[in-house]
Length: 348
Image (cartoon, rainbow, N blue to C red; front, side, top):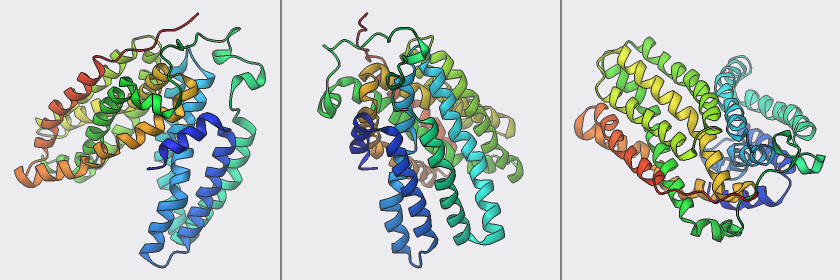
């Protein structure tokens, strides 16, 4: 979203609890409006106005900002557990939506989900979301004293200071390239499996394998992020993607495709928690919203090229394996971006 940097600034400066409430109301209004659309332009208006607010403020931006305030020593694990919610939602929501659509029609289904989100989510937010541990007389991780702070010599205030920091661009390139490859993997996994003579039913199970491995990756990499240098942790995720890409580029049947899917699922699962931990370590919890918001916008051109790139290679070669083989080389850019990354020193 083009407004991500602005939303990120709001997350850092305003109450996350009330921003999430506003986003839930926006989601409800968006789904209600969508249920009444009669023309394509009306759909586009809803997707350009109401739904982006919910997408940004009920997603990684707010959850990462909250968790980095509440956790320091166990931040990776907390981010990993939080990220599991996106995977579980991916399992539950399609089934719920399909069931409601079959019984009541798509318009009524959207209305039910919209109203249900308002009635269930808003009370939970108001009851459970607390902006900062300090407001309850607590410290991150439940510790007896506040954690060490980033050195003020390196902690540059404001969005402008974040964008001028080389760490911002190194992390944007590393994560952006990894997302570029992962999106290409998702869009090409099924047709590639069919192309190497995997049966359609078996090929369809590959996405479930990726989802399960993603959950394992989020939890596993979250733990590792608390114990190892974050550059090495992110680098391990990227190396797993390289291994998965190499396997898929040479695959000849279900077994080798499944191994590649497992590697990608584990690697991609680690991407969200490690990314959040990287940003918090580089810019401090008080600037996570602005940094993530600006990164989301800055890496949009990279991720938007994913589908056209894979499609171009398939049109030229007639093979999905070519795209997977090229991902091995492209991911080296992400590794190169991580190499010079340096973190601010800690005080105390």
